[in-house]
Image 1 (cartoon, rainbow, N blue to C red):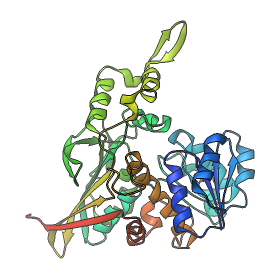
Image 2 (cartoon, rainbow, N blue to C red; image 1 turned 120 degrees about the horizontal axis):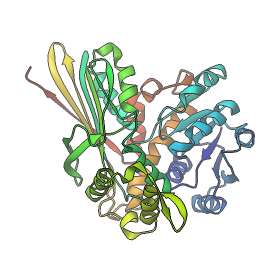
Image 3 (tube, helix red, strand yellow; image 1 turned 45 degrees about the vertical axis):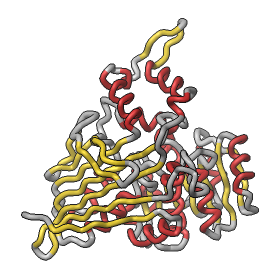
Image 4 (cartoon, helix red, strand yellow; image 1 turned 180 degrees about the vertical axis):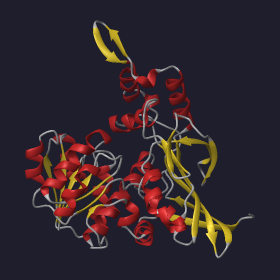
Length: 388
């Protein structure tokens, strides 16, 4: 089988590609990226005869489709802004597909994947992706589910790449309609910094306030748990506290609106100016603590008793004591490895349905957990009986 690693020169997708090299038997693994210099550097770094490079421009739809044809799976590590274009190419090329984001641009191509007998799973990294697997693991042990709270801490610099800067500003866009909670059968739009809740993440991350974010878990879990009487689904997140302080200030001062201003006779978005500074500054490209932490709470009933399942995850330390997990790689590997796991499971025939599938319908949570454990990424579960 052959896999096309779109955006494979990126800081996250190169970790996904490394995982495919280390843990799969694909006969061909193609790093596909617009940045030829970075792409060829990744090929040299991977140092495997199965790996090659192709330059691709997803804005050229026909050329990209032609390049993808003949591959079995496309692993899409491109940015949120490109996912509509990339998924259109994957569907027309007749490949299976997986991406990191899952923000809904993929849905319009569901019928094409179904017609061609292929599977596309949008949104499978750490969040979304692994989070849904953890929530479903808890929910599957319950007769009914009342509450699901998905929370995560992404510990990385504000602006280690343009894609990450775009994600940060996207999630706290004041006008974003997809920042919702699911409550009593309805999706309710909320503003940035809504519903603060202190979440106890595993050490060394600690307890900090988290706020509602526009992630696909809220939508996909509402669908997957519709027969379990779920009443409330909330998805929260946090970054390092200095990042959160900055985002709050940018929001309070209206900078996140990205209003246009004139500088030396040129019109430019004010947030674009801030993003450019952060991308080229020590403050924007470094942080004290690196890595990822998940916290999932599922509350429901089992045999008439009210139960609470709390699932968390841990990974190797970022302090240099574990080779390959130093500093930023503790973050990028956490995001990239689950996408590679999804690709591996599809290649192994573990996904039985075709079309565009939410993660909950695509994978057995235990299959994902078993694969993650092989990479020293572990899922932990605590079960408590609650008073009514």
